[in-house]
Amino acid sequence: MFQGTGSDVGKSLIVAGLCRAYRRRGLRVAPFKPQNMSNNAAATPDGGEIGRAQALQALACGLPPDVDMNPVLLKPQAGNGAQVVAQGRVLATASARDYQALKPKLLGLTLESFARLRAKADLVLVEGAGSAAEVNLRRDDIANMGFSQAADVPVVLVGDIDRGGVIAQIVGTRAVLDEADAARIKGFIVNRFRGDPSLFEEGMKLTEARSGWPALGLVPHCPAAAALPAEDSFGLGAASQKSGGKILVAVPLLPGISNFDDLDPLRLEPDLEVGLVRPGEVIPAAARLVLLPGSKTTLADLSAFRAQGWDVDLFAHLRRGGEVLGLCGGYQMLGRVVRDPDGVEGPPGEAAGLGLLDVETELCGDKLLSPVEGESAEDGAPFQGYEMHVGRTFGPGIERPMLILAGGRRDGAVSADGRARGCYAHGLFAAPEQRASLLRRLGGEGAGRSYAQALEDALDAVAAHLEAHLDLDRLLSLATG
Image (tube, rainbow, N blue to C red):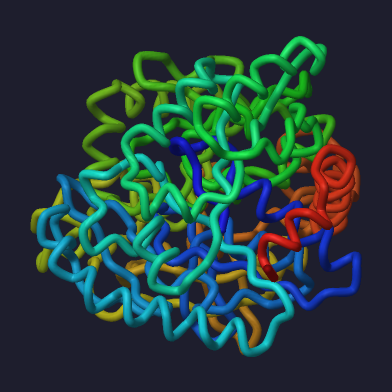
């Protein structure tokens, strides 16, 4: 089990890379994360959902995503609550305090899922959540030491030197853990090192001496990691680096952004530059397309969009001849009204949408989770993706759909002038034909690169990087010893 000294220290990437590395050695490997908190989710073939990071780790193992790989997924909502997804299905909506009372029940679910994975694999690589040092949450813990103890899984601690203070991260973790939990940790990895590794040799020795744990490796910064999806919005800055393309796609960064890996395939196009618009910034006048991605809190994000003055920017963008595209929650915002009468995503309420599509949305009913495929209504460009949303969208605008799904079902809407459009399908731009279609509208040309192959290449590169800097045999002996 790989636990961290904090969030975003690189646990997900290390697990993904090791999944691929051990798979290349001929082992049957599976990933597991007992509890994840993220609005970046992936659909499983059976209609469940798990964290996007575990879906990527499954890909590294050559496996389809499975709800057992992430049995508890917390999806933050407006306020301090979260939707609790247990073994792929929505179980409850709970406040942070109420969630604590659910943990004993959820521990049993995580152990069931872990047992099923262990029965099918030679090696299960487990990812912790947040920090191993959160001892205030140790009671009934299912994410870190509580799970490690219940499942009897040894732990490797990961620290991030890039953020500074890695010696204090690791030694401080040792200082706050009780003796039983500290004994579960079999060593530490220092991640994201930049520069001459000989300059940190003394630091590694000092950390060993002060923590009592052996050093298992110093992992340099891995450039190939930038090609892989970020687990959560902390990683969006690295995941959306500018490419210098001639066509700017502006993406307003809203608080409830979800499924933002929809943006990643766009980085394969030399003609495109994806630029995040952060709170306090304006939507650039140079943007050719404004893209509103998914949202876990559509009404709250619609309010935040207006509070930033981005609605004014958007209308000015359209007057200049620009285009706008909404995906899932972004599509809902482009309609005339969004209603949440039952408080599915936060406090009950409704609000006028941006009015660019002649549709309205009511957030009600069961969550729709399913793989989809089809083609663009306009030019027949094919795609494969998935739907993941609550709510139904209706109105005259759906008579001009953006997509035609297999079986003839329609998805999305296009404005009468063709410059505003939206749909529910995620994963749309993984298809090079869809990116080429978008670029033709915007005055560019698609490169035709396969996003699936780009992910495979990046996973191979990360695996090779870890093999060069970690002793995989030693790590394996910890798991089997």
